[in-house]
Length: 37
Image (cartoon, rainbow, N blue to C red; front, side):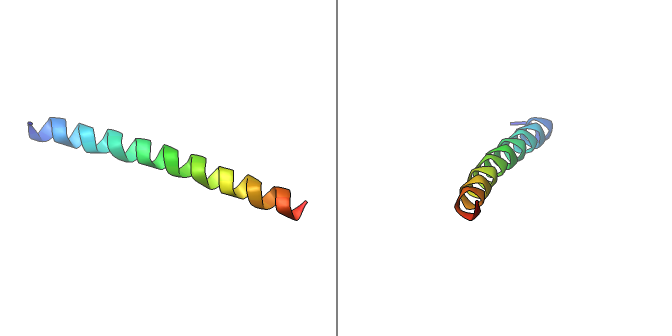
């Protein structure tokens, strides 16, 4: 793989990871909010 290709691949991977993390975080947050309500 070229340097450019691996740079792009890691950028995409971190974007996906961040999206997944945000999804998990909001799931947890709504769970907590429901408990608090």
